[in-house]
Amino acid sequence: MKLKELASLLNCPYEGNGEVEIKRVASLEEAREGDLSFLSHPRYKNWLEKTKATAIILNLNLQVMGKNIIRSANPQLTFIQAAEILSPEVKPTPVISPAAWIAASAQIGPEVSVGPGCVIGERVKIGARTVIHPLVVIYSDVEIGEDCLIHSHVAIREKTIIGNRVIIHNGVVIGSDGFGYVQLEKGEHRKIPQLGRVIIEDEVEIGANTAIDRATLGETRIGRGTKIDNLVQIAHNVKIGANSILAGQVGIAGSTRIGQRVVMGGQVGIADHVDIGDGVLIAAKSGVMRDLPPGAFVAGIPSLDIKEWRKICVLLPRLAETFKEIKELKERIEELEKKISNKDKK
Image (cartoon, rainbow, N blue to C red; front, side, top):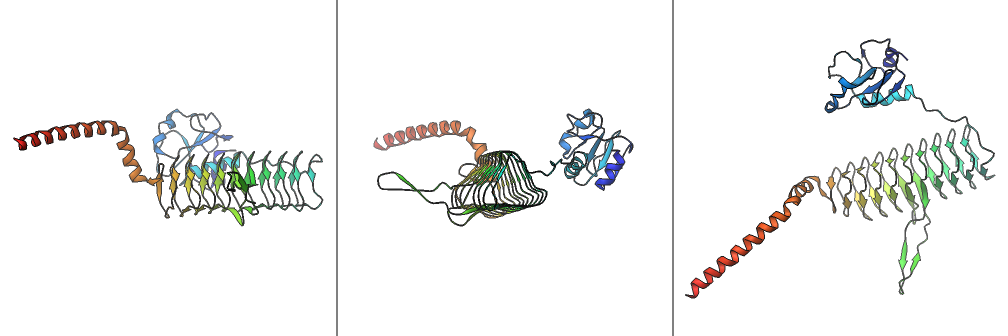
């Protein structure tokens, strides 16, 4: 595709030779002839001189000489749009494999793909154009919306409801029993029946090997547009609001409520029955054990306001030296007190 044609599709102005051919997208570091790349932050400006990209998406203000450029107010978003144009998603031809087992009571919408080795249980409903890759197991009474993409080795337990345009990556388990037990007098544990369900709203993406537990009673719910990374654990009765981001290895204990647009870094741990407000930012490896108001930005274990945590991080390397100074001052004070006491006795 010629640069001028791509710029027109992106509704962006271009500079330079509009006749050059653009074949692929690539990073500035790895780009070669025929590639389109982008620069979103001035700190990487030095790469503009080194890159072999045929064209670059830049913001409206950055001036560069001798390059073919597409101008954009949001270079990263425009790059994503260009990638979708140059490398469109290829969906398999809709086909239901004869090697899949599908219950007679299941309702399969038009243009659905079901790969070999899949098991689809009683009364399951699957919406139009959903793609289910091989070796997916769907228990009874599950509802899956339209245009979903479910990768191999996913297990979806009974009564789960999944919205439209949901992406579920390999190895995800949705609707497994919540971790609930009562300890009896002799120390043994009695399992609490897990009778609820999981609801995944529209446009959620769930990373590989993530587990989302069914509710004890009621529901575990993942809000619209939320994106979940790999290896995340979401316990029973958790509620997550719309458009939140959970990075890898986040763990959320039972009955926690999380607002909209919450961002959690990798390996964040959330205690049970915690309320987290809208727009909260939680730094990686933090441990949250109390409620957080809307807009909070916290870090550390236990979590603290980010400003307080930064102060502590500055002080920590000096603790040993400070302790030594305090010990020396204590000894000097004790010596002075002895001298004063001896002088008073005389």
